[in-house]
Length: 494
Ligand code: NAD
Image (cartoon, rainbow, N blue to C red; front, side, top):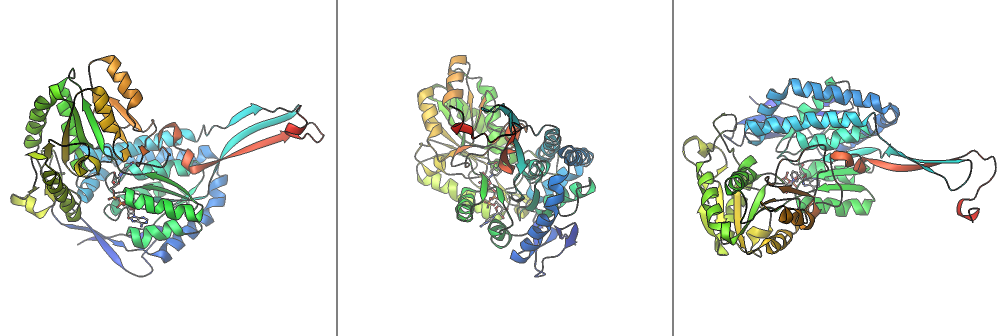
């Protein structure tokens, strides 16, 4: 029997006004997990009103006090880590090892954001006038709308919600319809840690029926979005028309560059982990291996061996190394892309088909897939697949490798395996991505560094790190003139 969940509005748990619901499913076996409100514009309006009503008092709550709640949330998440990780694995499929990491990222983010409560630094600077004081401070923007993807169902909402809250904003959160249960748990943890009613509100539902009204609602000042480029671009367009601040974290087409002097064993292990971890469904997943021609055949051999050895199954089984794809639509998309690659002339060296033996037939599993002979212009080298598929592109030297890396619409993460320190630094300088790793795969960002991408991956914002407050604060400049006379800035300063 599926558990019933409710929206969280103004501190109360309420159904959708329409009474409609939807279910979340376990992608490993099709089991129905929970029943959630299928919210629409009326529910979003209720949540926005609750967030607006809670704002004046939350804004004036001292930041260190706001931060203490986040600190307590971090402690509570840590106490519940295993249960939360299991719930995340059931809901979106990735293996327990990885959902534990997802939850840990939420703990890290809670402590990082809590620390900001006793910093929230502004800047003081001398005035050009005598007897005048000048400084600038961060102030909250108002009500923040948070819309997230399902692949990091716990961590990604915390990157947005915790900094927004510590800065003094209130929030309306719409989790992905593929991972609503994790949204419920996050709200419950904040409530238990003492967050006042209305400061965080959660509406469950689809992008069209709940996400889009959230973007359009006049009480929502900022939209912080993580998801696909198609949806992010539409939100940015709508946000521009309405004069809203929109912060976007979108797709990737991330590459690992492997040079001829690299440690090939380490590089192959990193490619397998970056490409097939989370079943390739990370925004930072390695989707391309751009490899020096002298190392290419050996790298293909090693990665194919690793791909064929990966144990596929239910992520709750400790023996499993790769879980299912999130749903049937995504499974079909992945398989279509493999077909497109083959049609363009790529060779399928491993995988290339759904995995359906025995119990796997009940879920949405796809074999780890390796394509070779891929050229930079092919669709499989340009478009985000978001599944366990990696393409090998052969190059003659570092310069060509960098050019190929930079020749996609996305710029999230890249990595290089190389022995020569000079080439490593050239790559760090010239790879056009928001994150660059040296002798490490394309995944594994830490919360205390800025996270985000160049070009089509984002719109210039960075989450987490020392940049975490930027999307959620305005700068206010303050001048205090204690001269007792009218001083007219540049006019009197000659
Ligand atoms: P998606 O764009 O389909 O959905 C993301 C969210 O947007 C969901 O909550 C969805 O309900 C909502 N949504 C859909 N249509 C909407 C609309 N018209 N208006 C408002 N909201 C709407 O993406 P997804 O399939 O959930 O996630 C996969 C994508 O997310 C990939 O492209 C991946 O690269 C990206 N991603 C990026 C990052 C990052 O930090 N850069 C992190 C994780 C995932």
